[in-house]
Image (cartoon, rainbow, N blue to C red; front, side, top):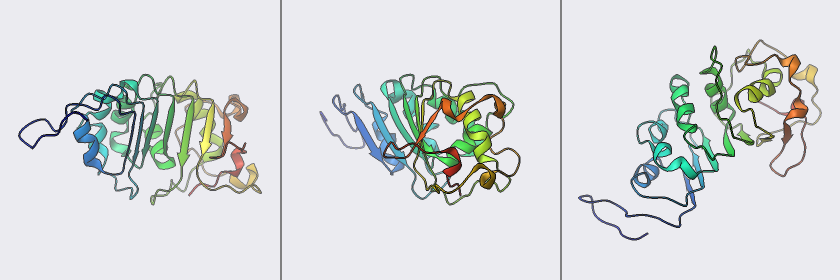
Length: 218
């Protein structure tokens, strides 16, 4: 940090060497968007209480990603997506043209994909690794068919995705017959019969391979 000033002037002149931001405070990123962050490559934002509207303006109103996202390669946005503005969030994500690793909650993913029903668009063309937590207080719709639609939708919206890292609970005793049910959780973006789970490796936080059927979803 090169300087700090009062409210009458700029808060900061810059963090030329800052490469990582981690915050659960919505005000931090609002201030940082005003200063040069040429080395920023990693940003972790966690709305741990999943208060739906609290963090939305970080991406939409404060334009943090538009201003600072150009060099970000790893981004966490757990608990930040509100369904009614999901398409706008997706547009903000696409400003991070170097993004490779994205982490969000399952409810964030559901809302993003629901916002694209009927649209043949990518969520991000370059993400190779997606991490999913499953901590939201709001459960996914009861009519879901999560296990049948997850991989086809990820392949359709993230065409270069190689790894799905599941950060939620697992049950290694489950099989597909136990997890089938309902119609379509994520808005079928692709024919499930044409996409195989082998195209995307599913693993836990330690890198151990998981089967799709083992993922426990709220």
